[in-house]
Length: 309
Image 1 (cartoon, rainbow, N blue to C red):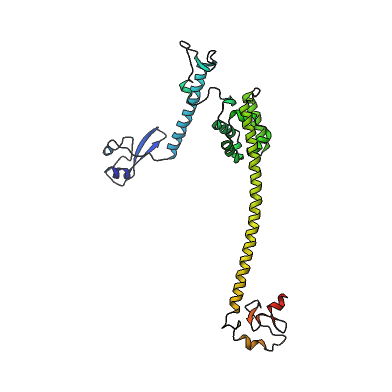
Image 2: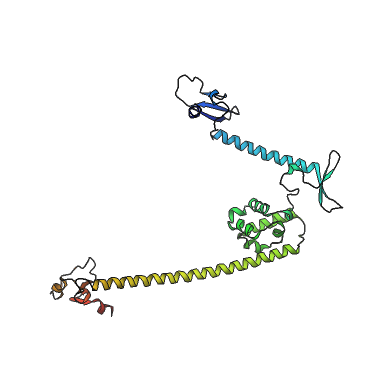
């Protein structure tokens, strides 16, 4: 019964009322109400699947936008009601309440979720946040190899601050407008001199050396592939020549071992007028005759060997 009800009814979202309604799609004259907000009684505790319509899609988009806006407002309020400071004893960051008893905790406020306290602190970014930064700059859409370079070389915030203009080209950002845009935005976000650590400098040197080796490997691969293609083409030509030679040898040994058909003896000494023409396979090509493969040239038959000589 429930299967039959599922075939006759459909659950859709009505944007005007803001509620889910059940639409009857059967042909029974006993059902007078085609649209109702009440679930059919025979469904019991089960329910129908919601059909994906334009109104349902609009509702989902609205809910997502409202959730994103509420999360942004909530985290902004948390940053206003808390203050981050350095504990003089442990040297670590603590988060002190600006309300209530004013207690401090080493844990990040729960409502911040996985978001960092200072979003503009580039030195604290990881690979995921570096990817988000380049996506905001429009680099990922224009330069396809940038995302792969970030994952391959493990580029995070401290390493990103040490990269120079030529290093961006190494990452695959070959358009100067995106390089300038990214460098200016990093300067605006960070707003202070970069304190280069030894570990990050070593990582940058490894990044540049790896790119140099990768470029050399690509050049070697291109030269090898070009050489391989030339040898392969030469090999194909040799195989085709050997195949043609085998076919000629087979034709030579055919016709009962004579190498030419019986009728070639009859037309070999045939006298032909100057105005007449013999048509050989549509293009006057060579045919097997008494002297092997022969071609009619001028007033007589000429062997193919003599023509080649």
